[in-house]
Length: 185
Image (cartoon, rainbow, N blue to C red; front, side, top):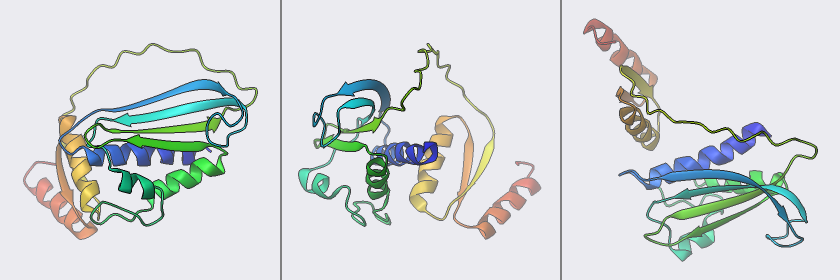
């Protein structure tokens, strides 16, 4: 399920970014692998896609790692504790396996194994050149969660934009109206 796997990647990348407020690196890689029986967890022998998400954040101590996938467990102020529980549930429902390795001061690595689609041909690797793009303009961001607003503001500033963040619809309408009146849409 493309949407659910997208949610897994989104949740893990969002957690990594939130763990690195001063910046850092998140590396996402995928590769095709063949596993023997019980080589990884209780996975059956066969072809898998191994997805790895590694960050250069502060890492986590063992007591946090032990509870990481528990529903409602969170270390974030205002967090729900459902993000990683959802990630774990989605991976399991797709007959996959997930592990996490982390050490305080040395970042975190999540590895996910998902069964490869039978009969699907792998796309040929494509070499891509990433050209940094600086954008210009103002952006109005509305979200009721302060952490999400802060994250979006940080990302938009890195892109060269000037974000204005508000917590609710009434504040968004006021900010929009004021910006229009000042000639700064």
